[in-house]
Length: 124
Image 1 (spheres, one colour):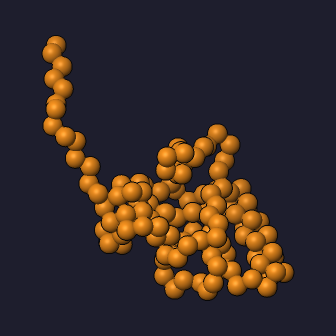
Image 2 (image 1 turned 90 degrees about the vertical axis):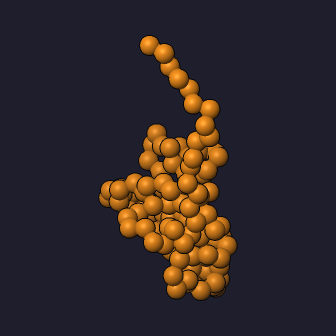
């Protein structure tokens, strides 16, 4: 059997925030590449998320800072990158739609055995 390797360039579509806004379903957009979101988390993940959010709110309230804690909000990083971290801390008022300003902190709650890819910062 003969194996033929193509020398044609491989086409990968490059999507933007406008494309992402028109999609149905849950996707993140990482440097123009659509990435399907994982299914909604189970109880232990949700409990950890609520505890971390409560700790941040308590610290913010005690400090008098004008920060806001948001969970599961699409965050527009660039024109071709939209992520949905588990939790973000934003300096200033709550965004009316998706987050687009710089965040103070972004958090992903991971289960054991899951690591973040150094190149993209996303789960693998």
